[in-house]
Length: 213
Image (cartoon, rainbow, N blue to C red):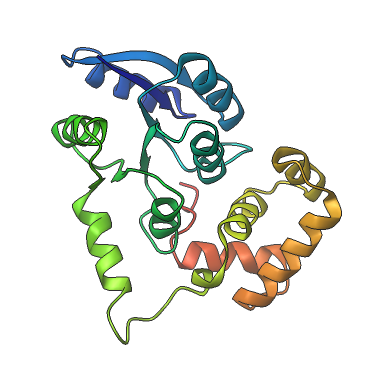
């Protein structure tokens, strides 16, 4: 029996995932979390084999949560399930050890196929994600300015564009506010902006954040 955990902050999406997966033979849903902090605690408690992980969580993002869980439990298989398909997020998450990457537009059949594949130790990349990754490697393809960011810089950037203050970010990732300030201005320098407003506009342009409806 494959033990499964869902990490998703939207109740409606989490309910939909639960309804799809609860009746699948060989799967046992052992926990659900709506924040990265809860996900880490529940992963330690329930030791799931597979985790479905949203990227855009409040506070600790799916990227940092994935990294922390895999350091704690390297045998856990994590599938990223998100609306974000643009570089560099897919490559960064796969680099830190995610076993799969799906968009929230995938159908129920593909979701089940992906969960079963990664539970067997395979990787599963949705076709839309695979296409984006392949295109990003083609010579002459315009590169996202965010490509140059490290995983930690990308994590800090995602929290900055959510409107989090530096003290709050420092508390979430357990470093000093001074360190966050260093990351912030390093990010500005790498992507060529001078303020959080410009950073948000750039992130919107490159699909790293979705505009409000």
